[in-house]
Length: 195
Figure 1 (cartoon, rainbow, N blue to C red):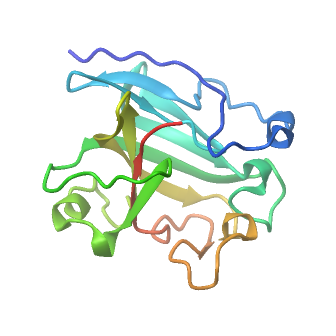
Figure 2 (figure 1 turned 180 degrees about the horizontal axis):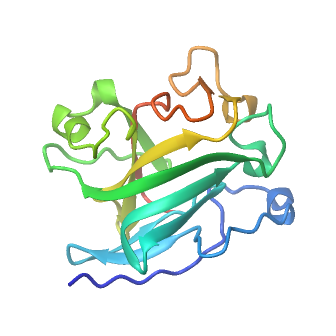
């Protein structure tokens, strides 16, 4: 039997200015900015991420989540107003095979695109694999861990995912989101050492 506890934390990553906090974006009822849980004997945390809110699909079982993502502070696109709902999605808890050491950096999040990732990690995506394109690790007191969530992002509106205008034209993150197209999100694995 898994022991899961959930707690809400409304802090935002990347030292976001108080102007964004003042925007007053409130998560939908039952959604959390941060999850804390025990998985495979480890006490783990997941989140918070700017604009993302998560909810277990059943009770307090955090193995499958639904999520929403808002354009909080125009963080993800400069084409839509602050607070616009961008994505609805699903997340599936998974533990990557220990086929290599976790990447480490001074940044909170260390990205690894599919082309540079071990094939075993890319192949362990849930089905439909063509829609689960983003893995984001959980973290413990020492940093990123192999466990985390495979995320399926389904845009609810059209926009350019340009990180608020901060991405260059050749960035692998830059893409056009189209409503209902869950196959166009960047193919990325992110290791999060926590806030």
